[in-house]
Length: 507
Image 1 (cartoon, rainbow, N blue to C red):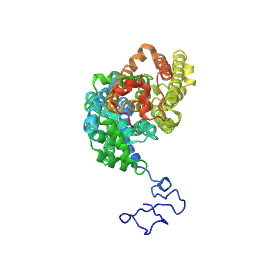
Image 2 (image 1 turned 90 degrees about the vertical axis):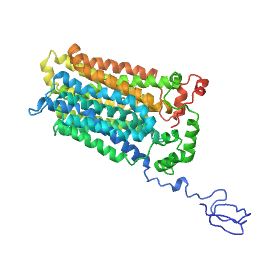
Image 3 (image 1 turned 60 degrees about the vertical axis):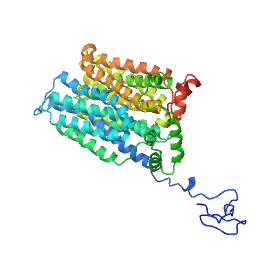
Image 4 (image 1 turned 120 degrees about the vertical axis):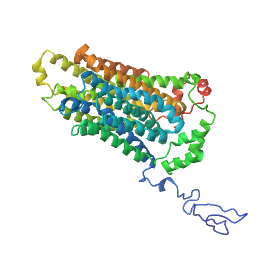
């Protein structure tokens, strides 16, 4: 409403005018302006948009995933060292307990994309509680290692769905100003879950730790249940009014929900339905970011990050005189949380490319130093005794470097670079690739260690991290501060290619 006076008006009206009368609207302060109650000055800046609550609720599923990822190290350590443990896995069975999660993630990741497009992002996340609970209960009441491995598969399946649906949901409900923060926060919440797993696992048995995992997954479901569906998915289902209502609910007065939804609808209106066709997959705006996403997942996993997390207790067993292996693992988890949250905060300011380059180069240096320590220690016992603090400090620096870039940014870029229509498909492909690479790394860690010794294993990972730096410099585009339409233009060879395919990239 505008409260105004006019010297040309015979009657001052509140909320309307008499027929055939034109009332000139002028400000009592300034002739060429008017006071708008919805003006920028009057917006309640202190009010937190519901968008953040919705993203936080979805990201609690990432905490549940982090507990599953971090479960292997404390659980297998407890199984092998606690006398009354009903299960005593062999060295080979321990590798299966650690790597089966990745196999399940491969399956869940492939199915998550089409399912999220069919039934919605929210419903996919809610139904994901079924494999989570099934997996944790199989582990808790396991009578032998086979039940534990089966439970790890179901938990891995749920993790695969979470890896696709949660980042997609966070990106689609966020504005461009905070897209990097919310999109990369997935990894931050996951490492919080990982820290909870190793801390709680230090005080309870592996059976009770599995119940903690089931409880956190249930809590995440309860918190997320009341959150709205992604407005972009609603528009794709022709529910424009529902999308406008959801966007107003999420953003309040910060954006014009009706205009935003109309833009998205116009862009989606002429899109083909169903899964991506082979012709669409051949377009550069689809296959180029897909290849980059898979390559980023390769360098993320072949840096040895998951192997370090899964077998951290065993690695620190060699330097137990300096610090208890359990305490060392907790320190690693805490450092990873701090470093990841720091990366989430600065990713929209520093840029994706810079952080990934720093991450890869620092990981390479850390693993090289760690390899040198084990190489000298193999022939010099005195050196190993005097410098037994090196494994902890180098792995701390390694995880700081990993969390700075490779921990979260590949997932963010997989959602940013890919058009909306192809986002779920490519997201599933990236999750499948990530699970495959994680399985290879975790399953072959012990074999590689036997073949090349501990120092050779870490030098192998250091070399791959080093080569990843060249990939970042030469191939990866910078997406910081860019609208998703501009990112699409980067992958188009010609303007003609851009016009021939009707794939939305609207944020």
